[in-house]
Image (cartoon, rainbow, N blue to C red; front, side, top):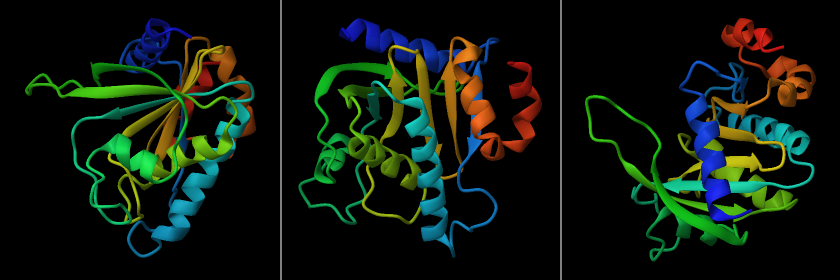
Length: 206
């Protein structure tokens, strides 16, 4: 895919979640069983396993990784001293998927504050499950005492089906699409992991 199509697809899927047409499944990853402080490893393992399992079902033909970094320095635990940004932290921990394109964008808007502009890169991961699970590691670990971790926000996109996975931290993730029919299999296959308090809205999609 060309740079404009990747950038525009990501932007359209990301901004749709803030609009009226919210075609999105919301999954619970860490759940209520394990505490983030005293049972961080079991909680991390459950969250990563769930995200990876759903990703296995989503990305059967191709997968594009989208990584956004806003200048926050990495926590040096598990990283070399020369690792100075989020992209370097990913590379240092074994993420080596081919770079496709780069651009800048605002991820979050706040009417009362100046919005941060993020550096964003897209990567062609194809069917490389190891690369995909490496990105999932960093996404799930973002707010946990799990190291190493890169200070980035990540998305996984199937450019052919126009569906996107966004893991925001160990608590949960969203799967977005333009067409609700693209999500029906995930809705049925992983019903036990869907976020309870949003079930009514999700059921209306189908």
